[in-house]
Length: 352
Length: 118
Image (tube, rainbow over the protein chains, first blue to last red):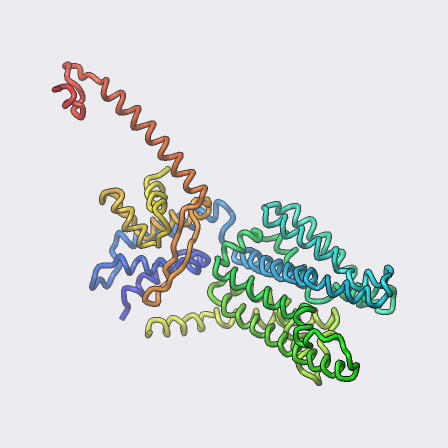
């Protein structure tokens, strides 16, 4: 027998899918809160009002041509998260600068030359550029930010391809620095700036709690990847006994690899949990797999002693793993959202 | 500004509220004259969100059900203030003219008849 809730649900089915996804449960709460005790059927007035409301929302969306685009909203969320992770990477670079200066000056007897300068600080301008883009985007200068992001990402792709395709040419190492995790992150952030409602919209969709969670996770990941964190593990020792110091360094590298892999795994699980809630977030999660899948494989490579070292996974490998991750997560989300899955969940909900 | 819009913004000017809270508050503010139903309320909330006059504030789960709170944005407060101003000017103009109004028979308007007696 249909309950009042079932009958209200059938009426709510007249609303656009995106609106139902965002407000369906909430409207059901309002309708049931307003129901009389013992009521089993929606009143005629309520039914007419719901149908009229659905018609008004559909009309308004059709007229404005905006709103109901979960894909663009998903891209806005993903773009925001990608920009956040890029900023974390930029912060990591900034934190590492003192260590890098120390290493650079120790090697070249004070003068490091152009090679050393590029080797240690070559990615600096890149992080600076993304920081500027992020500030522009956040202050509402969408168009300028998008143009700058396109230029920076095009240059990055050129560098990455050069470094990967011609590994023996000069400065190819610098090109490979640009072919890591930052490449898919930059691609997502750029696509989002160019073709979505923008990072502010993404922040609104995520809400304060999830945004704070994402920032915390990004900060934790950034901390795990800094040189100061690594030197904490080695006790900051510079090596009195070269042999003992090397053993300790290898141990520390192994521990750090495991910590980073655990961090990446925890971040992925948290992201999945936080983004499983609604259609738009789930699509954002699928897009994030482009970054997440190669990052996880790299982290596993660092942690597992006998696997292919994560750093050896170059551009083509990362792209392949990323694409595979995209396809697999996409299929998983489709499966969860399939009519059968929805029916099963509804059964669970109504029996609970 | 339509009356439901005005009443919803007024309800939210007191602080963030969820859907059912807005409904009850609107009924109270309008002294029982306006009762918003769910369909009207959510069509209005959808439009007000698109116009950036209100924004989702926080969510709570009560008895396994999602409750989303909405709050007035700065734009929303400005729009409500402008509407209050316009309404005040209109009522003042109406009151002024009504006070000066003389019925053809020589009496004053009923609402101001007390003044006539004094």
